[in-house]
Image (tube, rainbow, N blue to C red; front, top):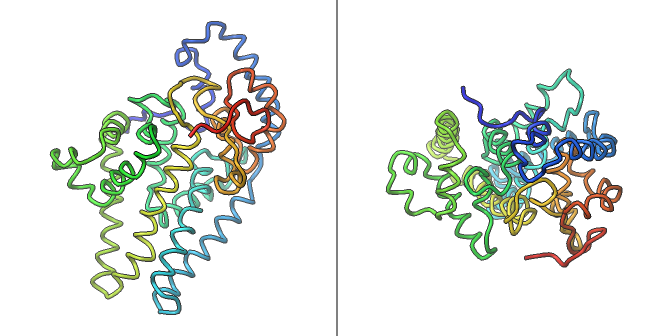
Length: 330
């Protein structure tokens, strides 16, 4: 299998490779500066992040309980749809941290547990873990590159997000048609077509198709055994609906307007009342791109320590962020 994305353990080295930062002429000076930043960042990661493990376990129990209560009629299906849509979105953070190998940190023994958490999150999210790792590593390596960043399709006016979301949902629901009937792709948003053309390979495409077949095989089995509506309203539809929220808070908002590339300038810290809770610390997303091995809930505290150094280097601080130099750009 050809790997065309950096391994999570080697992402920092990849981003520090001067061939990927041509605008910086003094490579050694830059490395020294980044090394000094790393000394501070090192305080915020290392061991097993039990908070993430517990969060995953709690929401796994809650999501499963809603599924069971909806199937046996204890709660109406419409209520289960609303609740499990909210619960489904919570599984992205454990998956995201597993993608970066942050849950187990520097601990080598038992790392299979971390991958297990990531793969189990695939169930309520309907998002294959290994494929998301590949896609997300490309996003970090090529942030805001229109041809290579798989998340770049989300950039642009906020008003365009619903149509782009519809394109993503259409691909997820009708994958074989878009894969094997090229004229169908004309129905997609142009940004979505460009993203799929530039970021995936044949092997990953086949893995995506296999995941689709398993998912829809389960749905077909549920329909044939009389559980079609509960499976659709409590599992399948919530997984699709939560994608709009994820596209907004993790793809569009942290990178908007997405028109610059390079360390310090490709993302931002943009804080508004309640944003740290709503976005799980990724209102400080610039720090995540600078130090991707730091768990999401540690980012706000790290910003308090590093803001004075990073803002002069070009990191955008907006809204109510410490050292903010502009209102939030919408």
